[in-house]
Image (tube, rainbow, N blue to C red; front, side, top):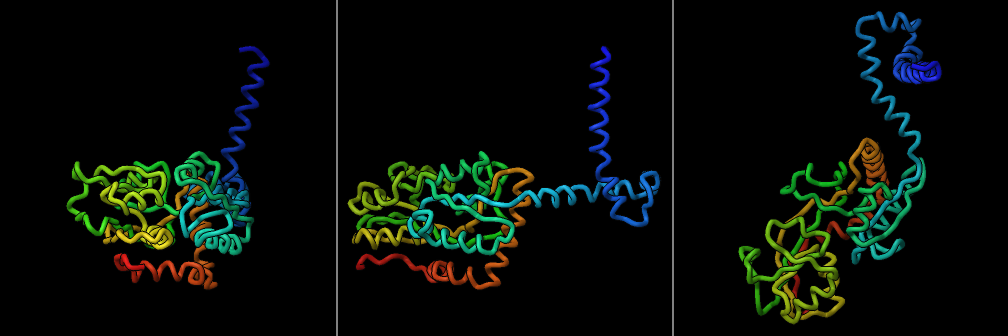
Length: 291
């Protein structure tokens, strides 16, 4: 080995050793009973205790670097129509107000792009995301937040002259559509739709047999479009969560989001913003056709 390579090796080794000693030195500085480094490494139990505290210390130091957060919202009727309009937009604005370490910036994108931005690290979290108990969490490219934003009812919409039973779902002669970003929620073949409005319009004239999606958004479209031939029934109820990328950073962000939600619950902002939506789903009944 040449002298220059040997010197480079010694420099690299010294840096690694210093990094490894950080938890011990910091631990010793914080504990008055530990007078010097030699006492730390020769006192039974203190070494393991220092290493046990290191993840917490790393998390605390990482938390210092967390300032501004980027929220990516799926473009949905009622919930997030623009970066300034929608129930979830108002909710994130309230979260931003409660977040004292920085700002929470908002973007609104088509559902799949919004999820992709989080998975690829261009945004810190996405909402809303449904938690499907039938899907293994290890199979997903993201993790769910600890907090639950609300509970949503997915309804099966059919034509009043051609009702479809839940037992009919999956039959080869029954054509059912859903939003293209939610096909993985279903255990039977279902056709992706790029437009909720177009699917409901097709259902109105019996070009499809059924449509399954969130009742709030779907009912709002049915009323706005003045559809007379569409009726509904309960399909399933889901928890609505926040999606975060996999990795250590998201563990911290999840903790931050949990604290923020506690704050907006305590302030009354959550009830003020989400109260009507929660009451809608608590009292939801199948749609009527005589609007």
